[in-house]
Length: 97
Length: 230
Image (cartoon, rainbow over all chains, first blue to last red; front, side, top):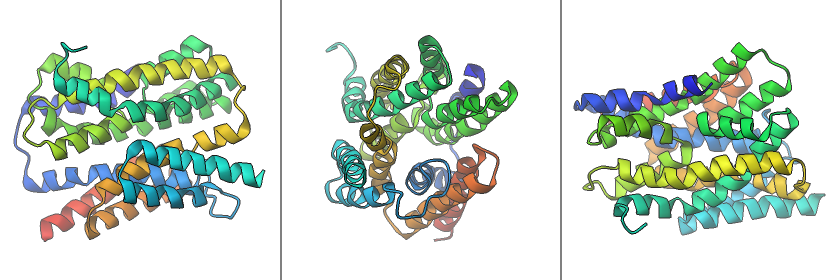
């Protein structure tokens, strides 16, 4: 398992070694990867937290996401966003339970 | 500490909030390892070698249902393929580091450190040797991740339900913060929606682990093509 996961990170080494200028279109595609990757973590984390689609009222992460996005846009502060998000999820769970 | 390069220290300092956020996630992984009867040192070893939250939770879940070893290894590989995409997008920034250094830094690629390094590169395009910043981030994230996994396995099921439910939202919260700063125009919105909705649908309909890779690649291709056309 160690070997296969290291293997997935190896393109860093191989590509950086070539030190070649990439064609513009490749650069433009690579530029999109961060936003795409973050969305690929956030969306399922909010709408299918247990591994299965949970678009119903008892999925509290759907509500917790609202103040979290709000504070992320407003303050642009990583730690504050985490505190508000985790806090909101705990408070909601505490109120519902 | 003062003898370290300023960029290494900066990477470490910027990663402190990330380190705080990693604790509950790694503890949750340790707890999962505990439930599937992995010992504390195996939980730590898996965190050190796989070093990727989603893949580890997937592997733990597969262990729980008694999946055969080849299935677990292949699934972990596919889920970690996301790091190949990260590696490809980091490579141009790290091309001025030495080859042995690059072999080591490859293991440092994880979601949070990747996000921070990309943000640093965007705000400091003139700085050489971005690998220093990544190293600093790794020096905080790695021990926190491995240590908290071991702690989670040892603590077993001592966490109250409300707390662990709240901690479960730490990952979405971190990446909401990163996502908000990465999406800056209409093409960014489109990339986000394609990757996000694509991953959710992919998780429902594709073999486990494949959804995010397919969705990220598709979103990046569409976004890149649209920017080229403009």
